[in-house]
Every structure is written in structure tokens, then in C-alpha cells.
Image 1 (tube, rainbow, N blue to C red):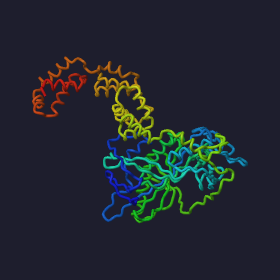
Image 2: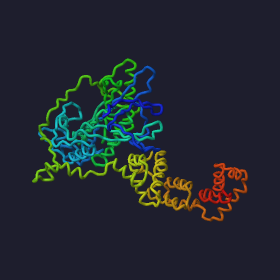
Image 3: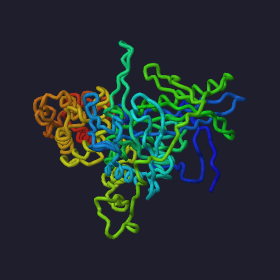
Image 4: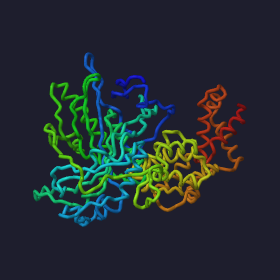
Length: 557
């Protein structure tokens, strides 16, 4: 295997360090082409540019950034990890707290089967080794919203380990080359969430809400294989889509169902890794990318000015766009890990180890869960390319934009238009209008049925492309009119009277002899000018293709 090395790659005016090797860490895709912008919020990471270090000046050393992530995912379950208390976002404070969640004496944990199955399916989807035996541990630390004074987690032997996540980024000056990369997954572990501390600055007090205490979490620990904010955001977005496809989690970052801690350090290639800082609780992909890139630049600037990097925990201030120190980690905290005495080892089975007399309701079968895995995003993208003949980058946009794939498929079912025409309108017209008004796909005033009707009119040549855009503008107003009604009211249908078209073309020829002379002198732009004149006279109701055919015949071209 070829040895790995770092190379500084230029992207526009920015510079990035990329891994180049002979293995699976990075491989170049074969598809190229323009891409559509991703949606607001979580999909906006596609618009970010790679920049982990500025272009080095003459005589300066290059910098390499190393980024590792710890991702906390709230499991979609009706009840908490070790108690029967309900899980519900935005419930009244302290209304969903069991005796165990409040850590009352004498209460014992009871493991939630649904959470175990979700962890196994996630591990399988992320190519992990599933441990048939895993252990629970107590992680001791004091915090006001942790009543027991410890968290039940899986430090020694987690439920899954040694996996990998594949994601794709666009490289090059024009960002037209798709590159597939892989980040290793160290482990996936089950653990409890803590409660929430609500700070009231006006009254100088902190209130505690224990509704979230004890909710089941998956902690997905990624190896430090990432090099910048954009890569981190894209990798997390890919993981988010996998979790949503599995049903493991809704992974709504705005509701705290997916939170990211980023460990960042910089060093000179070939030298030991630098001191790392941890940026905590990043709850949007855009902020994740910005926080990492800011922290990389901050560390480089600090070191180049002769300073040193402290091993500390930082938070990201989205208003200021910078990271802020929270607490130092120089004195390593002793969490006093110990085996959880109230939970036995978690034992899983597969087809070969399952006892013949085992009750299927009392055991978790890894092979059975593997058979239940749904189509994952990577397979969905491949299917879309093969089924509809669209470009690979279009399939990425369809999946990354929440609700866009369902919209596209609904239009396909209701229209006679070719998929390539549908994808063009969905990505270039619908998505453009959504972004202009900062709307989600679910908020679109143009329904799939309305767009399908419009495309049918265009496909049957009842209207021109320019007229179709006018109709779309009217549909966007949301006045309840159909595409056909708008075409009739505004008289946008194409002229079907060939004799009338012949007369319009002849009038254009007679009225513009110089243009006709240019056409006969083989000026390629002249014929288009005549076509424009005829269309203007017909109020854009004449078919450009038919006009060109008539003009060429009349001019004996």
C-alpha cells in the first residue's frame, strides 16, 4: 500500500490540505458537471469552500489541520434508555421524569430494547463490527442537571466499533470534480443524556429541566481523519441522512437531536500532532463548519505569533462568528469509570449463536436486524442515476435537500415529461425560488401536481419555455389557479396557425433587409435576431423551432 502524505491543494483563493494515498482514504470520482445549490440550513454546507490554512508565504512552513468528531444522536424511542418515562420534545419542564431519572434511592435501570436495536442497525449501516457482548459503565462527574452524579455509558466495550463512513465532496477551482472520501469510526456506544440547565440572567439563577435526563443517546466517535469545516459538515450530513433512513433518529439539529463536539489541532506535516481544543455542542451544520475553520485559523495565527495552544474546551459564538474559551482541560479530569453494578453484560446473538429455544422477544438477533436495513442514501443516489438518467451531482442535491426527492418523484408520477426536464425545473427553477424566499420544500406554494401540469403543457408544445416561466411565476403567487387557467387568461398558448406564422416571418424578412443580408452571409447570430423579431411580434406565442424552420425555407438556407 502506498504511504499516506499530505498535500496543499488550492481551491479558488483558499488553500486546503488533502490526504493523498493509494488506499481507500480518498479516490477521485469520474463524474463531473455543474451542481445546484443545496438548501438552507443543513444543506448549505455545499456552498462552503475548503480552507484550513492560508497559502504559505515564501520560506514559511505549511500547516496541516486534524479534526475529529464526537456526535451525540438522540434515539427515536417512545421511552428513555433505562426508564419508562416518555420522550417528547418541548413538553412542560419536569413533566417527563421518572423516579429513576430523578435518581431516587432504590430505583434500578431497565434497558430499552428499542434503543439496543437502533444502535445495532446504525452500526451495521456504518460498516461496524457489532460486539456480541458489550458492557455498561458509570462515568462520574458533577453537574447540576445530572442527578445521579454519574452517567451510564459504554467506555470499556461499546456495542459497535471499527466502522467507516463514506461521503463525497466537490474539489477543484470550479468545484466540478466529485471526490469520495472515507472517515473511520472508532466506536458507537449507548449512553444517557443529561437534563437541561436554563440560565435566567435577569434573575441571576439557573433552572433545571430533567425531561431530557435519561433519554437514549448514541455517541458516534469519528477518528481524526478530517481536515476542515466543510469536510466535517458534509460527513455529518451524510450520517444524518443515514440515521433518518434507518429511523434511528429524526436527527433534527434544531431540536438538539444531533449535537457535535469537534476536536481540532494543527501541526506541520511530518511533525507530532499539535495540542487540540474541543469545541462543544455545535447544533447546525453551518455553525459546525464555521467553528472548525475559525478554530483552525485561530490556532495557526496563535502559533505563528509565538503563542501556544491550550488544551481547553471552547464554545462557538454564532453572533460573533468565533470560538470562546469555556474551561481548560490541562488537569485531566478523573471520571472514575467503574462497571455499572445494576446492569449485566449486554449479549447479542446472530443466526449461528442463537439458542434453539430462545424467545425472539427476549433476544436481539443481529442477522435479523441486518435483513431489515432499508435502502441507504448511497444506494438511493445510485438508483436515481440509473432509473432516471440524471447526473450524480443532481442525485446528491435531491437527497441533501429535505423533502426535495419526494417532490421530484411526485412530479415524475404525474407528468409525461422526461425525467431530465423534470430535474431541470426542480433544481434550477423551484429550488431557486425557494432559496430566494428562504423557504423549505414543504413550504413551496407550487405543488408537485401544479408543476406536473405545467410540464405537460410544455411537453405537448402548447406553450413555449418563456411562457412556462411566466406561468410558474403566477403559480408561485399561490392564488389557486391552475397552469391551464393561467395560460388561457394571459393568452400564452403557442400559435397553431401556420399561415399566420408564415405572414409574420415574411414581414420580418421584408422589414429588415440588412439582417437578411447578414443571414445569407453566414452570420450565425443574424438568424436568431430574425427569430426574436418574429417572437416579439407574436407576443412570444410563436414556437422558435417552427419560426426557424419557416425562415430557413424562405431564405433558402
